[in-house]
Length: 430
Image (cartoon, rainbow, N blue to C red):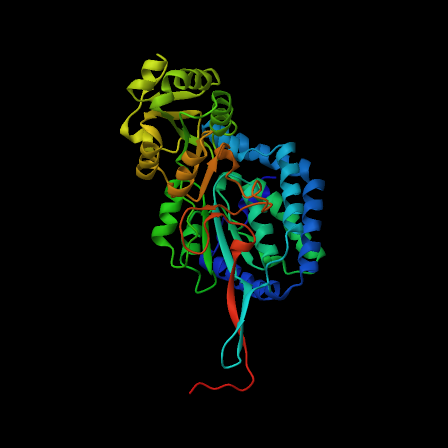
């Protein structure tokens, strides 16, 4: 399993390599844009089958990545994101099946109208072209991005974190096998075959027009770098500083269930809750049991004075805590003066990713859902549902927190644009 690590890493003309990868992807994108739904679905079915068949080998490769990460003192949350096990392998293959069954958006006419001069205009879905995805630590992102781009008719260049190189190489081999079986170009899903960090900088240049859009999937520093340096459009995936607001009209049992799941199901994912807000009007009944539950579940709670008063084990929160994505079993907690104060806090400290309210008051819920300016807002549900698979997209490339082109989970449809087809009968403009 160690051999691939040396591929292209030594005595390599990296700029020439990256330019050739982009050229190959561009040629593949032209083929994919015209590929039939049946051909793409054949490839996806073969990919899922190959991943299931190679599950043991992929897990073995991943074990080497995990061992190396542990040797470098990676955090528990990082190890969790990096780890691939049988359940996650099964979920990976299952998500490919879901993507396969999603209607193909390419060629879909979303709107048509006829002008007074008799011309008919159609708005039709088309692929974006070549997508570059730069991601960290989570090997499943490779399968998600590769299959979503294929279904939407795009070629993709994938640059995973060096920590997941072995895992990504093993998964990529399965995707290439699927392309081969369907008669599609292998360059349609390209994995950058080097750990050299300079490859990221070259991708950000756009490689002489070889890349149409870049999707960063990782921590705040990666996203900031991509947004700062990229010379092509970026689907921004900022950090998930996500909130759960427990209103005075919330069921305590429901609030406990949702808060515990939102924070502790997988603390290291971008949909994990990082801040708990509790309505002052309900704090006397709800605050103490919520904090006690979190601490007993192994979560460190950092709170304001009222939260500290509720449980002596709570650590004082600093100003920095309110805007921090911990990606760990840590949560900031604060008592707020009703829904308006909660909305104001989220607007000031949040990242416009995912925020939830727990309440039985439909009017309060409606206000929260309408006024919280985040890509995903939930009522009486965990923030951990911030996931393309949970939205029925099969997978996602990321959660876009910007407002241009795509917002929220980026799935198959979000990876297409449109063009206008105009049908005339000899019209000219006076």
